[in-house]
Image (cartoon, rainbow, N blue to C red; front, side, top):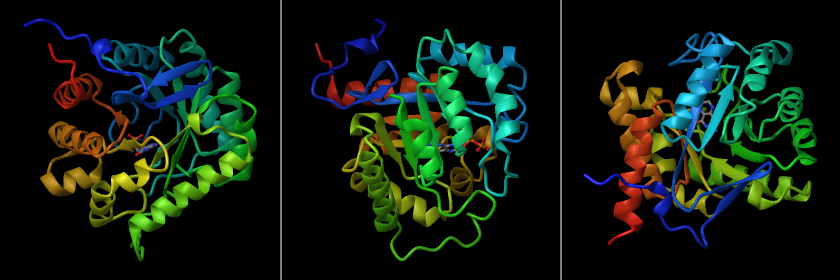
Length: 290
Ligand code: HH2
């Protein structure tokens, strides 16, 4: 079989994301590879504890086709113990130093303003804030840079978010929150070309809430390009009965449904498989055809 060059896919007039001095073309869906440098993440905690292991994993994900790498040093799984910014930086700083020559933008998954500022100084090109830049200090930390931003919705905080989450209308509430944050960021002088939004699957949401958000992802796509994170999550385990180590088919199915509904970036642990799935979707959906 002839090999397929994803670079051949159509581009013009499609959305893009400014990430520091790079521009990420979102004309076709992209994969953000997950690199957790934590002892306690729900699916890969402790696996990339040394700087060398973290660097190897990041480069391997780029080889597998990741367009961005998202580095996190605080688990935000339900019930996780919060990590203070000093400890977070102790885990993150050396890893960011070792990723300076990574050929794709490095995103840092943090909700702490001091960590955002230090990460940008250390070469991060994007900040992924699961708290959606609710903290004015977070906005101040990123305003002067040209980094990309992922604005995510989370109800409450990781410690308590899964204790009986309730909404009158989850889609209205999440869309209202995200458009409010995008408006606040615009007011602070941050261009829309730097922003993606994320419904925050599993962050203070029941399975029913997650399903409602997936069905109405078009509401969020109207606000900004959408990033989704469903990889290996508990909701997929609840549906399939599979353990966290055995959720790849479920993760791929969820990723495909999200891109079918307009998502442009998929945050994933299993990069090679997700890139293949999105390549099939892209060609069948939009060409190129001989
Ligand atoms: N999910 C997790 C962490 N960060 N960021 C965004 N934008 N969207 C998500 O859905 C999202 C996220 C949780 O997954 P993971 O990083 O694998 O686990 P942990 O928080 O336990 O480190």
